[in-house]
Image 1 (cartoon, one colour):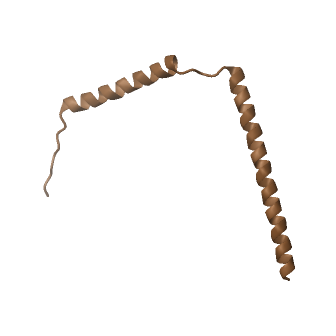
Image 2 (tube, one colour):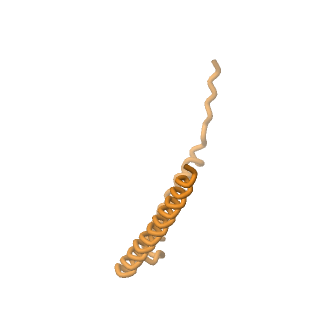
Image 3 (tube, helix red, strand yellow):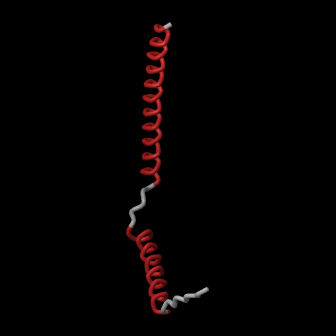
Length: 80
């Protein structure tokens, strides 16, 4: 059995860790200083808008489902 050992230079490993560390630092700075977070009022208004839209879409799907169900029942009863 032949064993092959691959040696990774320490400089490459340190370079990768430096990149990861830099990425984490930049992400933190972006989230704390550059991102504009919504106010509580904007957040609640958006949440209400999403709930209303979801309710309307659910009603549309219910109406389509019931109408297709009605049409198919009429069709199948006409076959018998």
